[in-house]
Image (cartoon, rainbow over all chains, first blue to last red; front, side):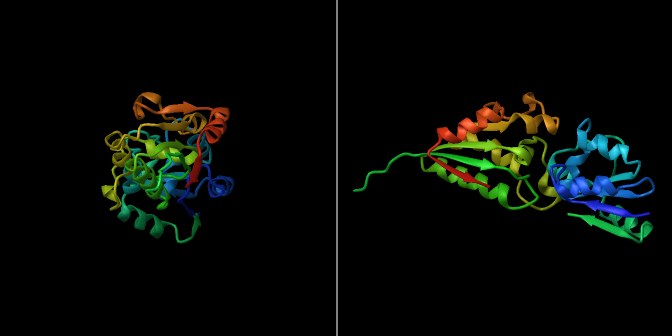
Length: 97
Length: 123
């Protein structure tokens, strides 16, 4: 079980690589420009949902991007403490950037 | 006294608002050129369209708000704005929530825009 973090937009090679290796039982935290993958109804968001992984996004970065009312309900917003809690639950991390 | 020739400038913006300093820099270049009464156009292409999202609240990450900067453009007579239609669709953005003067362009129209301006600055 891996915690993946993604901080680049869905148009990046990092997003494509992340999707290829994301598996059920893993968790993905979107942060920075990664939050744009959470926009409801977009192809990127559908690909995230198809992965079967637990999906999280960093709330402060989501607000900065202006996505408060656009994110898919399958993603769970977390604050910085939630981010730390995820790193405790998943000892191994893969950062896509 | 030297003669000042007025040239047209297209500022091409390809990056998201907070991933780097490129967005902020490009908008400041456009604003300062407009302040000097130059004929400036701004083209938001690819991830650059993400700068047009209206509800940005950058207080959460401690930087200045790009959406507010864009909203101030009419005060500087900077009203020639173009955006990549395909990228807007990719991110699910609707026309009615975007700046009023924004013109949506397909690939051919964007290619043609490059030909219409004297200078291009790309960010």
